[in-house]
Image (cartoon, rainbow, N blue to C red):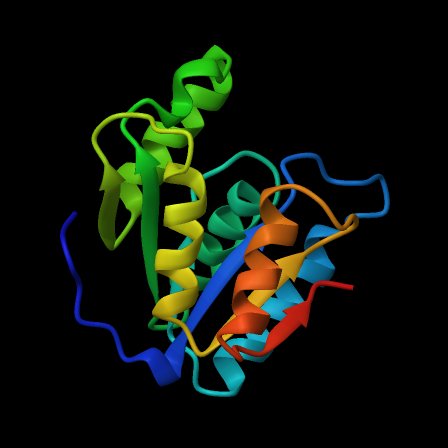
Length: 157
């Protein structure tokens, strides 16, 4: 795993579900991300999963055209996109090529590489931006970890 120098005070970790509910609004997402930038945040750690991670990455790409921000792709394992469909894989590859930096947590898939990726992001951020609609699964575990580490959580809604 390669280690980056990050200014934790200006870094946001993004976490959320792979399935977005019907009331999810991309304009609201952009407003929330811009609010972080207005507060001085300029680095975003994104876990590269489908759903919320992908939505955030795309909006941040758009914002990056006008604002000086960094998008860091935090990849749990090389096989992350293995079960993605063709369009999702193409999108993933485009996002990876657009990322300012890439961090690979594990070469091989392991039963805990996703959680290790989430912990890596939380450990390097001063705030977690979360899209959370249920109290179980990877996003909920990430929130629990952030609370344990006393990292503030800002929810999308």
